[in-house]
Length: 88
Image 1 (cartoon, helix red, strand yellow):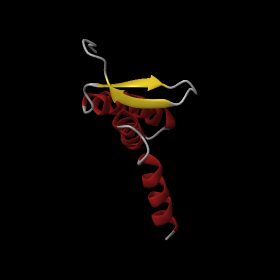
Image 2 (image 1 turned 90 degrees about the vertical axis):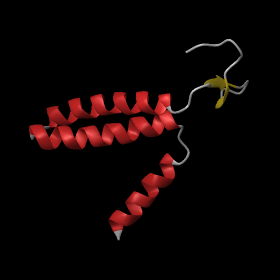
Image 3 (image 1 turned 120 degrees about the horizontal axis):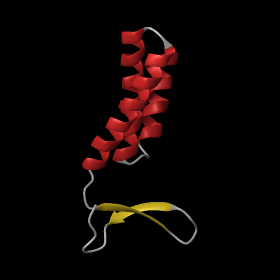
């Protein structure tokens, strides 16, 4: 039961993230698990997590083309369509 509650809390926390952030978290966790299982030590888990987070962020960013990050006058970040003529 405790694991179910932990998984539910983690899923709820990810719901507020952008696809790029979600991809980074999922990729990092998966990469760390695979890296740790393959190498059998913490160093492998750290390397796997870093590679997985980078790959996940790139895949997540590719799934939201035409979207840019902006900050309002209060410093809050929001996502909106990119201005005309803006290229990645």
